[in-house]
Image 1 (cartoon, rainbow, N blue to C red):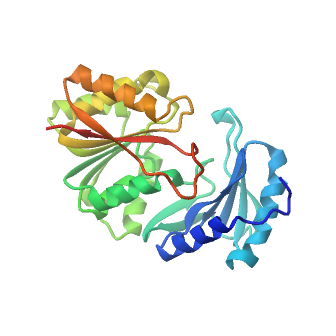
Image 2 (image 1 turned 60 degrees about the vertical axis):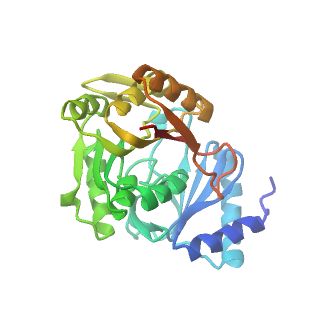
Length: 308
């Protein structure tokens, strides 16, 4: 790939489209094992190999002339194979005195980011269409598991839903509560539980709690003191079964994973087995493709609509 390669015209068109929709957080381009994202006034360059960084910076240099956008800062994020080796983005260019906490918008919804909080800044851009669906359709009771900074919960609350967000990290939930405040929502009227999701499902079931929409987007791998290791390839089936126990009739579940070993067909297969074991019926609906992500990039997602 030449270092002088211009930004593709479709990317410029998408840039204008996103801005017209009130969105300033999106992927600009994907170059093999690397990509560039706009995050508000900043750019984030993610790369699996250090050798790709000069080409990414060359692409960034073309942006002001083509789009009129001059970034405040450019951050770099190396993504090694081992998750435990991943670190927070590093400032490559721009004012080092600017705060590392910033805010982006997605269809007018505001989300806080933190460039110092680890390799993920606080918003997964590949869930944009799913958040849009939630923003338009989530009613009644909404359960967001592995909720991270609660972006799905914010969208559900804006739609009028009563939300419960569960995550093992109290710090992430605090950031989620801040996202509620950013959007003029009272965090006090919604619930936030710092707990192991796998332990929470049985408790919710015993209490008779049922939810009209459930988000199930677990990490690829995690550990907790209470339940030990979680590995999505091994444990997603049990997780789906547990979620079905607290799903309302005609409820809808988003099943999602970033694990490259599980595709949409794998998720459907896992869900079909869980439905069979629970003697339930359901239908599957794909998540629409993202304009700024190439085919096969981003999370694998499927919506499961339960029967009556």
